[in-house]
Image (tube, rainbow, N blue to C red):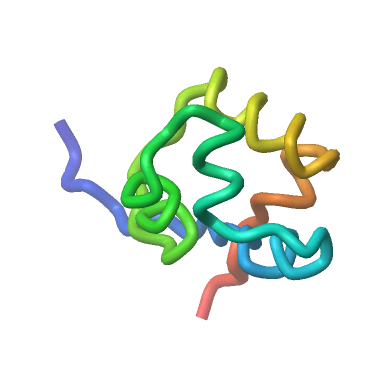
Length: 75
């Protein structure tokens, strides 16, 4: 198995929450996940996300996955 490469996925949860006037706690309650799990995602420390969680976040934030996630450019 090749060594794990650092991912370049960025999560734009802060921006989307601010644009919608929603707190992380409110989103966690609506989505049914813990604030800690959303915080890990928000701070770009997540290694994976379930499609069901991604779907629920997008439903509650009224967004598409591409608005929530992007790929950082190589440095």
